[in-house]
Image (cartoon, rainbow, N blue to C red; front, side, top):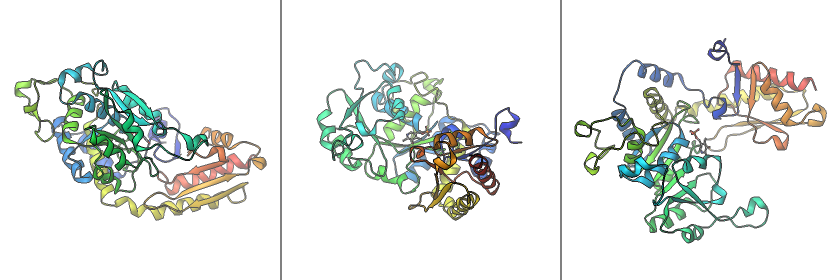
Length: 399
Ligand SMILES: *Cc1c(COP(=O)(O)O)cnc(C)c1O
């Protein structure tokens, strides 16, 4: 019986990747051990975040860093830091941004469900560009001049979502932003691997970059990393940490919070509800260490073997299995192309039936429109491979 069954929830197998709704990435034993040890000792959270900042600085090349409760929280805190700076009165007012510079320019192509996190801080998103390629109405993507044309006295910064083919290229957007002394906040939540991306956007000059801790870094699901400019990270810390302190005897580490630059300390800020546990920080710092030292790379051969075993397990079914080799440092994937006529159900229905079973099997749903179930290997084990193959046979054998 799994821990979740003993709590009254169903056992499932997550073959969709690091998706949050099915628990994110499973953690390596070393990360779990670090979290257990952290749970048995007390620590000053300010000093622990300062220590984490130094490690994030090393791993990313940024001036400073901070552990957030996920990349989404990193976006909220980053937007709040950009708008409030080191002004405690502004920190106390958020998300009310009346009269403050509160606009973030974003390409229409970059709009997505997570930009709610930026708006949550009180920011307004100003869309630029068109979605011509998706609309099939043109060949051009968003261009750097369109950001420049949208800058006004209300502009606080630029929001950018980094994907391998994001346009315009980040360096062009940074060039425009910095010409007007505006910071660029980058959502790079799922841009690891490759590990070089930890440094890449910072090297380009991005002012704040948010990564997920619970995706390929394999840290706790509710952690993330925010890396960037020291003054902005200081503002993040002030709006996130528990601020029930007496200013006169408060001694935050100077490399995280420059107390001498503050007229006072705000009370609990907009980030107080995005609490990060000491166990979470110990976990993500351990996972980051494993990730940056290439410890996970050795798993890739095992992943390919798992996917081939599942492909073998569906032979004879009305399914064409295609093992897709890993691109670069990415994961290999298994595409199961369904013959929905023979099965007598749509890919959506097959997927639903897989999720309903015991154990529930949750594939990646990104290609269901193309009659394809995508199997991501990161959370598999020999036992789970067998269970997945069995469930696929049960669900598709019935026809
Ligand atoms: C996953 C993801 C997020 C959210 O990350 P969390 O760490 O789960 O908060 C934000 N933006 C993008 C593009 C993502 O893929």
